[in-house]
Length: 457
Image (cartoon, rainbow, N blue to C red; front, side):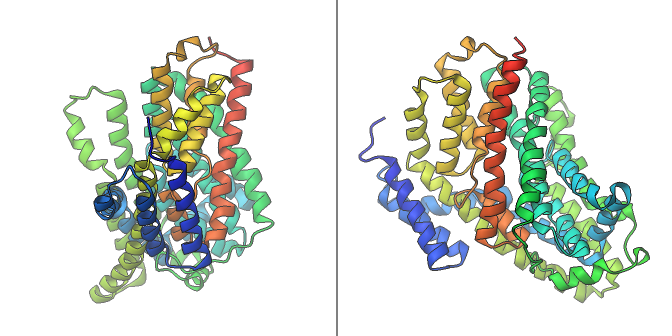
């Protein structure tokens, strides 16, 4: 593919733009990301000058299509679960079953399990209120709780089908689904342990993140709820109902899509019920009703509280979609294909080559799923899969590990974690960006070791 100039120019210019706009000048994230997207379009000859603004808007709109309603409903869920004491009740349930130390593993296990049928962003919407309530109750360890939740969800997101990314890669390469799940768990568990528990404890000892206002709930309000008696909180089932509803509805669609024929009559029903737009709406209704009951609010007060949460959610959705648009403009500049072409001919092992390609594409354009699918297409089209001396499920894992690396400004997930978690940019880089990188490197190492010891051929 011939380029008037290297797409690396657009990538470097975009990187400089976001650093100047967001870090040096400290512009609001949404404004800075939109301007940076325009700047990338201006130096990318692959994007027609007259189409730069419209392509930015289109990418922003596409991002909002995917996350707009879920984030707004997640804001209602977060506000309602924290304001009603539901999140605090679940946290106390965790601590009662596992003890104070074991509650960290409960958060990790919950996020890992939820991410199997549910997209990462939806898992974070549901788990962030629990992490915030845990911080309010304990008075410390917020960095640890966020990293643990992120590690559980992120590892499952890239390693364990039927999560869409590894499912699509396995299909592209032609790998048995059952074996992919088994190998995925082998890679996911140590990766999540190293990144979530070990790194989480390390960074937590060095980074004390305060409980800031987020999702229209103040830290002071959460700390007040943390000191209420259990009798003043909703029951465990009612408190958990929003999460249960979201997971069961989304999982119903995942199960039908994965295990039943495409023309199964129930498919149209689960496609509606299991769509995140509907599932999170139902979860938001359940959470909001509990919020109203526990706070004994009038209709007007209840409406005002929910409206405030939607304002907060709107800002989060706008920033997240703008981050996705920035990544999409880098992709339109050709950076992903350019890097993939440059790395495809490396004379090193296929597992490491695939990891490098996926990692480079991920860093350049932001989306883990796009990086994974791009790499899978290159690898499957090269004819080299047949020459693998190990089971091709390991190749799926190497691609997933590479696609997870270094989530930063061009990844909508970075902004999601920052805004919902109530973090600064620096805190997000030290927790979330570092976490995704550790998962990636640990995942590759695990793949290389496991494939050497147990090639499964």
